[in-house]
Length: 87
Image (cartoon, rainbow, N blue to C red):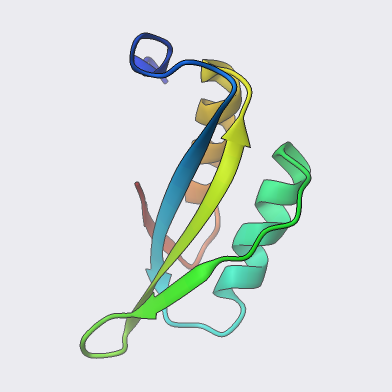
């Protein structure tokens, strides 16, 4: 990834990941599992269903230590098979 996170953010910082994925009951747990590998912590995700209920939006604030740390979490979250978009 060649992002400009280092120009836009001051690290360490709290970064709210918003992950859109298939409406599966395991989605929030799988997201937290991935985040725990990169930034261990006590997470409380916020889950909102889409209008038709086919997708869920899961928001989780995470403390990012650097540009590389943030990019690694983006990639790892995007690799979850239920995930469609990471914002």
